[in-house]
Image (cartoon, rainbow, N blue to C red; front, side, top):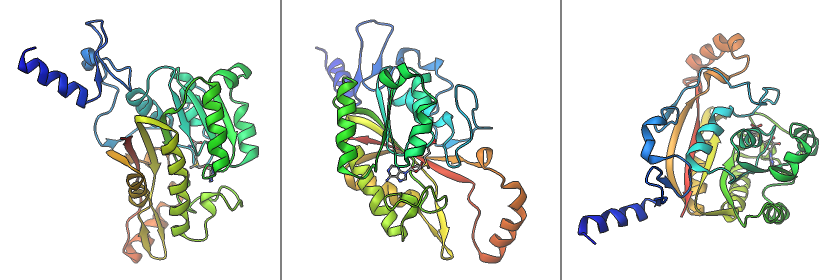
Length: 291
Ligand SMILES: C[S@@+](CC[C@H](N)C(=O)[O-])C[C@H]1O[C@@H](n2cnc3c(N)ncnc32)[C@H](O)[C@@H]1O
């Protein structure tokens, strides 16, 4: 084999590229994006500043749950980091955005949510058939060993040993209080406790994710005791300590999907000027890969 061919082969192996027999198709091992036709993927983002004019409301999504993420994030992440039929594991399922988009994009999903009434009501968004074949909803504390065992059992039923993508959209500390449960990350006595609980959930996610697959963390910062709490960077550090490689820090404009901020905008501007701080207009979408 010519030296240049050998070098190319090694490079492909390093980049986790898989060349499918068909000369017209070339994909990575973790996505269906056809690299031979890469110019046809204009809609897929590869830069670190994300601005969406408004939250997508079509395709089964609604905005009834305070604290849900916008479906466009799932669309972007699923297309780049999953293949059809892959299983997305979401350990903070909430109103099920990850599950709805998994169905829309012919992926599958296991979602874990702490609040039983929410887990129950989210199930209504899916047909009985979908709840058997495509979306599995578990009501549990994602930091627990019990949740891990339940997820393994569901993976087994779905014919996989591990998940192919991990989605983490935790509470942003106590900015929105989701419940009074002691296991709830939005109900921690201190931000330090929040970080520790987050790490436990992320560790479960790491263990349940297939090697060389990706994880996505969606998070914003908070302002407490007259200082910024850098929740994004602190949770990012926890992920990296677990062994995840950092692949991207995306800054996402949240102005299109903030609720009812208009009325209080002047008040916040006054407070910012008086208190020496800045008003958050962004959150993070961070991408990691398991080694
Ligand atoms: C930011 S919301 C997620 C919203 C979701 N991504 C969506 O689009 O609807 C965080 C969710 O995590 C849940 N939660 C908090 N602590 C949890 C825990 N220990 N285990 C599982 N879920 C938890 C909360 O009840 C809340 O629904």
